[in-house]
Image (cartoon, rainbow, N blue to C red; front, side):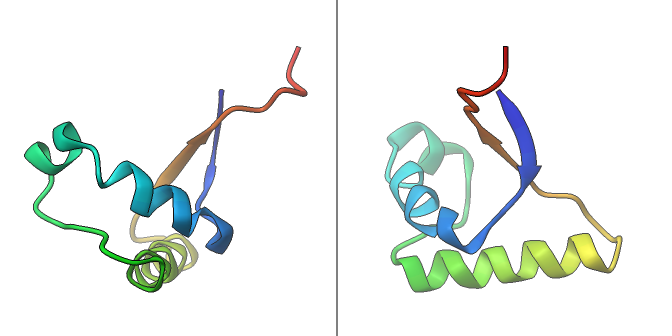
Length: 65
């Protein structure tokens, strides 16, 4: 598993995971489109750059041994 900053190409995965009923149960936000998810990612990247928050993506890296 790899922790990394969010990338624009992660938008489809954000939309997909926010369709999960358990995610919807515990989060007030909804990602209804890739455009909306890209807006979130833009803000997450800005927060990271401005050093006011760190939003991590969890990804599987098959190259890790």
